[in-house]
Length: 155
Image (tube, rainbow, N blue to C red; front, side):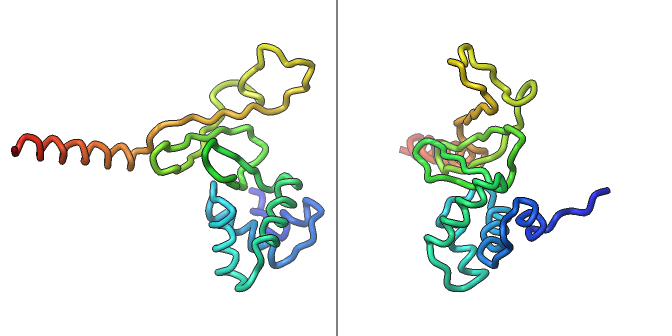
């Protein structure tokens, strides 16, 4: 079995210098998949102390460019970041709380979907975002509806 690669190994393999901010940002993205930049900045500041927002944004951009981190942008949400790259997976987003989860590619090899007209593009990825309501928000909605029905029937 292959030894799991460390964050430092991943940075070196991507020809990036190993720095404390890069290690902290990549660690934060690994720890908080689908986190927005503000969440990552908070985690990095907890780890390193003082670090500027711009430094974290710069590191995120370098990690995305090096294909160590994937940036996703669900409609109505700030950009989110994850370390699951290169497998053309998709996402499901809760319309209520904004929670995001990974969804493996449904069928076939990347890209999962074949465009009806490529317009001459060499397509190497398809991005699908499924929208719905997560189990927690569904349960809360059902409880609220039950409470409302109980209150109405008590009158």
